[in-house]
Length: 128
Ligand SMILES: [Zn+2]
Image (cartoon, rainbow, N blue to C red; front, side, top):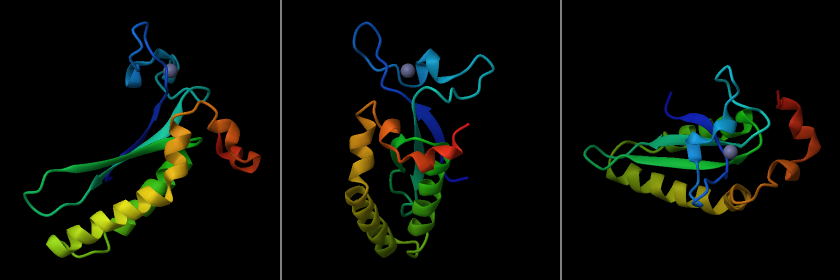
């Protein structure tokens, strides 16, 4: 799989640094994701021309794993359309720029703790 989904939260330690993956509340005792803490993110390896530095796209603020994974798959498929090579690489950069602009709402969501509350009630049914 070209990427993955994971959870993150905005918790900070006593010095004000974000805990990131180290937050103990992100996981339950059995090691599975805590459904009551954090928001879903995805990471996606962006295909680049041979020899170019590896690029990774990360986005988050999603209420469910299905939402994050669904978007990751869509972007993955979209980026696979242009042919390999410099022209295709430019097309992928343009696509990523367009996606960034079009999904600005998710970025705002990411900086708030009210993201899940802002999700329409009908979309919460996928929560476990
Ligand atoms: Zn946390």
